[in-house]
Amino acid sequence: MSDYAVVDPSTGETLRTYPTATDAEMSATLQRADAAQQAWARTSVHERAAAVRAVAALHRQRRQELAEIIQREMGKPLDQGLGEVDFCADIYEYYADRAADFLADEPIQLLGGTGSALVRKAPLGVVLGVMPWNYPYYQVARFAGPSLLIGNAVILKHAPQCPESSAAISDIMTEAGVPAGVYENVYASYEQIEKAIADPRIQGVSLTGSARAGAEIARIAGQNLKKVVLELGGSDPFIVLSTDDLAATVEAAVTARLENSGQACNAAKRFIVVEDLYEEFLERFTAALAAITPQTPSPSGVSLGPLSSSAAADRLQDQIERAVAQGATLVHGGRREGNVFTTTVLTDVTPENEAYREEFFGPVGVVYRVADEAAAVHLANDTPFGLGSYVFTTDPEQAERVADAIRAGMVFINIVAADSPELPFGGTKGSGSGRELGRSGIEEFINRKLIRTAG
Image 1 (cartoon, rainbow, N blue to C red):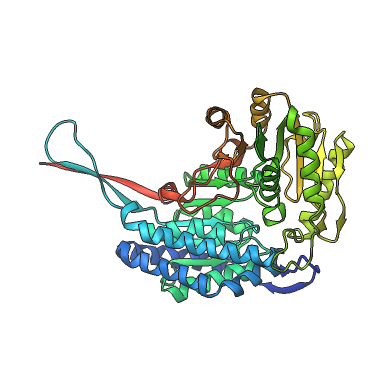
Image 2: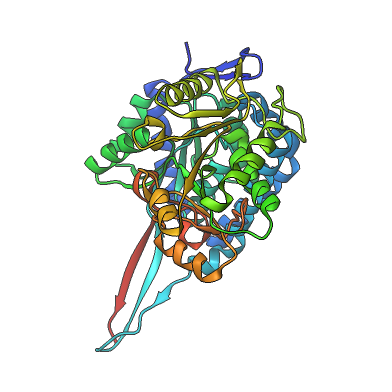
């Protein structure tokens, strides 16, 4: 039986299965990609940009179809799916429009001697992407778009529950004019991926997923001296220090928690509130979440749909039950029906509770009371993760101070839902290494080649 299948999380019905690649098919994929990459690297950046720009256009043309695919694969509300597809088109266009500038030679001013020196940005070769289910198109776009423009070939192994969306991306690449072999979609097993990373034709690996998966991929890549980019989990703090509009702050907190039905690595998950605002924030935050009713299937306009799978729902249920058993207070929610969870609020989660250091991947907010700024920063940093963070304050100097003190890859001050193609995305500590998006994202899988010429 294949691991790759579309299982509607709204009903549990298996809609379609896809055959896992044989070892011979995987070997042929590597061979095609290696041969195609060498030809692709010889094309001009303008030719590559034209193909990637066509990829963006096809995403826009097929946005409804693409959104419906991921709704049945992982339960994303339809309007959120449309937004994801649009964001992908923006990413592909962003890199296509700026590739010539990003990849231009960088002259070096020599300290002595004659002649010249420059850094030329050359492709690495074939790069492998291992992608998760929560953003089936977006995760691919931010890895594949810059990789293709550099002149690398891409082999993409998607999550087992996303075979239809990964096939749709592959079809778009072909129709856009990306040559055969330059973008390869594979339904590979993890054993095949492990062997592929060790293969000398693979020069880099990008993984978005859990900390456990990241550690394993990093181990294999390290043993084989391969470049690796890891975007892993997060338990992002949402710090409330002061506000002149608590209603707007609570609205931002709800938005930051419920994106993608709470299944986003950079969603706000820990709400850290100073003493004088805590009670009112908790009351309003709980009421706002309680007013949101999950729906399945999830049409446009719905904030909360089902979790992505029965396995995801089982994990979240276990986390909530363990948290309460270990002393947390269940202020609201915690109810499950099939793969659908009500919004949930927990308090009194102490460092002794396992939940204190875990990531809740679903519509669960944990609210903490702190005495002051120093206590808020300490709690924000007291986590194995370091992806993003949110700081709400009316004091600009405090905002800068706290932003500098937080150990995370991203800090958003008085704003949520502000991701954009030009902004680098990534974390520290257990949230991974490397960056995607922005100029940083096109410089990960690249050979910065020095060329020194005599006078």
